[in-house]
Image 1 (tube, rainbow, N blue to C red):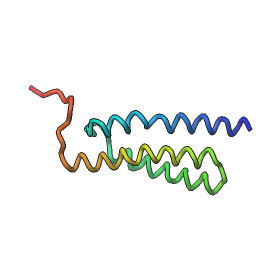
Image 2 (spheres, helix red, strand yellow):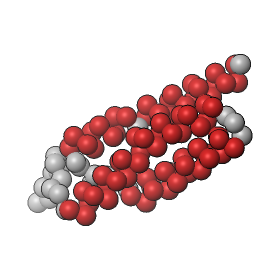
Image 3 (cartoon, one colour):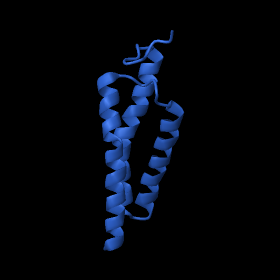
Image 4 (tube, helix red, strand yellow):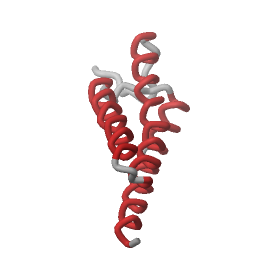
Length: 96
């Protein structure tokens, strides 16, 4: 039972780590400091963890990686969407 507790603790930490970034990106539409490549590779890895967790019947691994995808995948979509549109970057200091 304590092994699952470690999995649940790790899952909660991973899942909540993307919440502030997702909300801030959604609110500001500022993706200037975010890498589509990094988020793409991360999401691919998390998707692999979801399948792996399913295959080995690990509920914490399966459940919390799905939650991670729910917050990190929209960030990737916003990066692609907002960088394509060339939206102005808020809070950017002008170079003189």
